[in-house]
Image: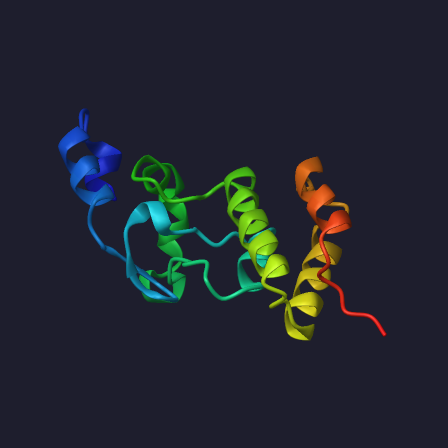
Length: 139
């Protein structure tokens, strides 16, 4: 990341990193384009389901967060807008498979509570998915 940060033209380095399973995540080593950088405010959405590879910030240390721009250059998803699109797709898939369980629901609703009143809100197309898909089990 330091090389990317201080290089005038890191094109070859960026290309090499984008194609390599070089980032340690909660799901093993992954290519940057598959990975998410955890955010203390909206990162709760990355914890609702297994299946979203989050960079192991305990392995890399807190300094990994200072490389947000460099991580974005190699393809890591660091912004809420990008992350929520992937989450929405996974949510919709899980709803279609009828594989959203009580733990997922509680985790998702807790995350909604945390995001309420923050600068982060779900896009309208995701709100439509929540309203139209069958993901809550009732009796």
